[in-house]
Structure formats: C-alpha cells, structure tokens
Length: 160
Image (cartoon, rainbow, N blue to C red; front, side):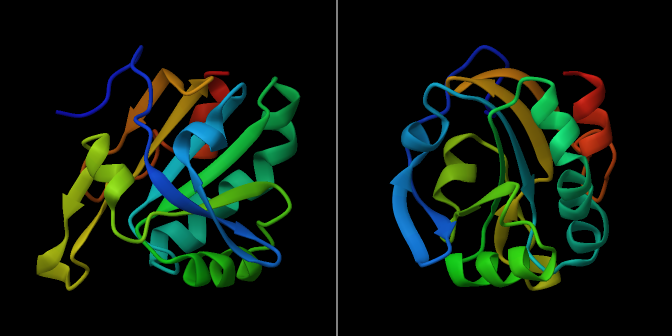
C-alpha cells in the first residue's frame, strides 16, 4: 500500500549529498519544519530523468521557492556518489537537495518502489512528486509506469 495524502513520511535513514561528501541523516531531519517538494526518479542519468525531470525542477526552482516552498528534494535509488555526479552534471546542487536511497529503503517504506528487473535495473522508485508540510503529504502525483507529466515541475508548480 502506498502513502496517501494526509499521512506522514516514515522515519527512514538516508544520505543527503553535501559539497564535502555524503551526510547520513533521516527523512525526519530533512523534512522537519519545512514546506517541501519531493520528487523521485527511477534512476540518475536515465533518459527522462536527465533530459526532463531533474532539469525541470532546476529551471523552475526559484518560482517554486517563491510559492512558499523551503526545500526541493530529489530522491533516487542510487548511491550518494552517483547522485552527486548527477547533480553536478545538471548544476542542481544549489537548488535541489539530492537524497540517495541506495537500498530503496525509503521508497519501499512509502510503497512507491517498482521492480524494474526486466530492464536490468532491479528495484527502483516509481516516478512521483509530492508536496509536504513538516513531513506530512499534502499532495501526491504518481506517474503510471513509463509516464512523465504529472510529477513534472510544471505540474507541481501549478498546484502550489
């Protein structure tokens, strides 16, 4: 069962990409006392994620922040070093907090994991976005398999 509007994110250990390396933290620490947009991608450096999803949030970050959002975060089932390299490739580090869910613990805990073994990718995250207030889901946008649109920066922005 996946997380729904009105539920709190579970407390899960994770890593956030920082300029000096990965920082161990938890979802509770990342999202506490913040209005946040969290979006998830199946994988760093994958085609749609790299061409549209992450770049859209980088491009729209200032407008999203102007709508009262304190934090924009991207999560993927990749390690912190891959997430750092991907953020660097897209100049995302200044606007987007990159969360490495290397073992998929977070996306499994919220029921938004997906078996992509047939494509050689193992278990990954579904593509989604959510708006959070102090870790509580206010809005949730989950894509159908292979889809892209409702979790885009443009769509999320239209609901802020």
